[in-house]
Image (tube, rainbow, N blue to C red; front, side, top):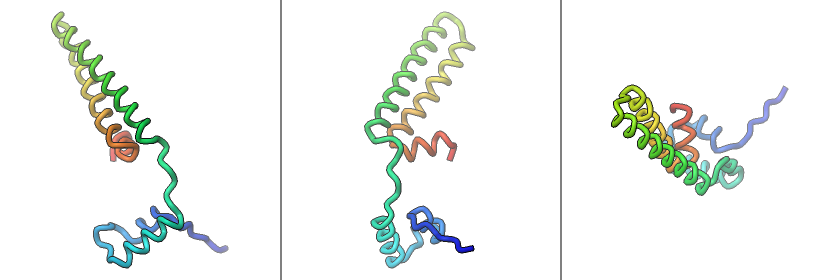
Length: 110
């Protein structure tokens, strides 16, 4: 049984380790592989990720307004829950603003 290896930039990085330690020849090989077998396109465009970030930012603002209102009315526990929700939404927005790879890493806790 013969095993065929797929030539990808990810497989190259897995085999050669940290790019910071690569020699100039290794970097050249990596670039050639990227030209022969470019990585697949990201599932979301930059524009789509910016729209996602805007949606998370709007959610954070709404939750913060609700938290402030609840706190004024003396509902401290409910206000705290919505404050944490607003903080979480802001973190999602920041990650989404950086694009899909950063957002995916954030979602997966990398």
